[in-house]
Image (cartoon, rainbow, N blue to C red; front, side):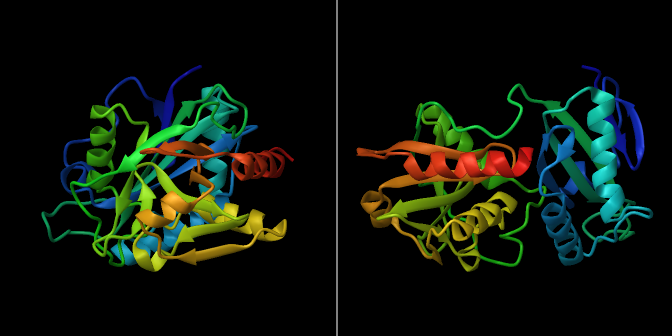
Length: 280
């Protein structure tokens, strides 16, 4: 595979320096990003990712770069995947504010970078072994307008992932400032109880995940009831299944939360439906 990146519409080799030190993404985390799954050379759910990207840009008051629209957003990812020889890949689209300034920016004009990381699996697959998880106790995520967007400030998720690693866990669960369980360090959260799906509400401060929305739609289409509501640790103990979702991995089932053990019947059903949807 050849390594290339797309910088504001121009494809350049990824081996050397591609950004300057006056970059506001580097200095201030002034931007947001989308992680997409490339399947058969095309990004999955590009429409939903574009909608979230533009909504987030409006919230951050970042103007879209000249020439970047819904069609070029997708086409440039398709072209880069082909140039890199990566029909199956993780794609990251980073949008950040260009220009000078300190906390007060000198410009609202956006710039972007597209990166491609090849994957071995041709499409979303379920993990062979259930994840081991616990609740991250050190910090709680605040609820505000930024909570549901994938901004470049990912410190909560980094600290949570490091905490999990130190304890030999695969992942951990984050709480909001009310004490509700909202997501994992790497995706949205679903639990299954008596054949019904439950997932934290966006009003509780979880990321408005693209895969979260796809799983909800798949479940409803196939007659599975879904409720968006607040969840607490007792709900985890009463659940039959627990799984996480994100755009790259799809559905990842949890095998154990402390002494609680889970099955993965519905997670397997949903990943099969997802694979059919994205490879059709």
